[in-house]
Length: 447
Ligand code: NAD
Image (tube, rainbow, N blue to C red; front, side, top):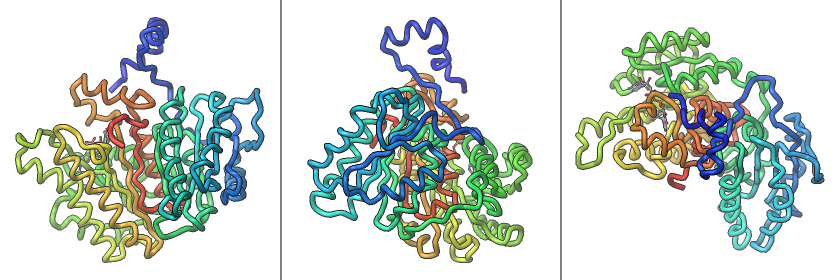
């Protein structure tokens, strides 16, 4: 579905009217292309005195190949501003944020990145805990102030996980995170605190097998494509009625097509058998299949309640249980859920859908310690307004509101969700466990 308003803002009339009428002006977001430089400009690295990340950050930003500066200059447009806030141990120290960012914040390039790194508040005590918690308000506000496609995120790095942030920095400090804004990410808080670089950052999933459910179209097809681009053999799964589209996706990426309704009673067993016999197991499981049956609660039929809860939550739990119990999910395996901002904020006409999507967050909370036991992870994305057939069917006014009421003033693309999932799937993201990251352009809906 084309965003006609965004197209209009690029016309001569639009360019004249939009600023004069104070209308939203959606920026053109830079998306990842293999081989492109990660950032449009150098990265400025700063920190509060006494921070514990400086050494690791210098090494990791260097490994990414960024032009890292530590002294601000007047004539530079920065691709990124990265700040180690772990040295802030009391509220008065929060002034360090002002000191670093105030002089340079207006010199961030289009599609630039702000990344603040702190200590997880739950790992700190007293005034340090309070000061670290305060970083969230700062970063989310910066995200709302930045223009021209620039974004801001907060990474909480657990004690001992200082050297495990490279995959996250590569994601955040590149066009792969185009539609992720104002998010809080925890690294090294879900059990594992170490990470090893893959042999190739271009093909981190080389030799891995990834299952993607609901892969015949929309977000699922994009996930399949991105995981294949990263080197995985993708098993693309969808219901038999989507068989033709499913084959087209699988053929395009050199993957396999598997027609299966995940809600069928024997689906977990069939899936386990298929993955074991054909591929000797699975490394990455992406639970993307999902449906909506929207009605306000008083008008909602019991079948619409059951259908949504079954596809979006219950079937996924059954699949996880079987794949874990029968050890089909390999050591260091990844499970990735697809929640929704409706599962965080709630949404009119979506009691069933929001319940199921909040349940996906519960699945992540419950699963993280279980997966950590054998080096695996479970995380979820919570997409906001993404341009797909699902959202093209939304009534026009609600669709316009959904697109515009966010810091980036536009809908995201399926590839934005897929890139976030690929970051979770990366073997180097072993310390990223138990996260729910919104891919929503910092939608104003909910937290
Ligand atoms: P979509 O309807 O285009 O695709 C969903 C796919 O899941 C379809 O191909 C469908 O056939 C498949 N599917 C449904 N039931 C299944 C079953 N029982 N077994 C196997 N496959 C089944 O939807 P989409 O917009 O691409 O959304 C993908 C996921 O992202 C969903 O979980 C959705 O809830 C979530 N999401 C989407 C948005 C958005 O803006 N589009 C926002 C938030 C969350």
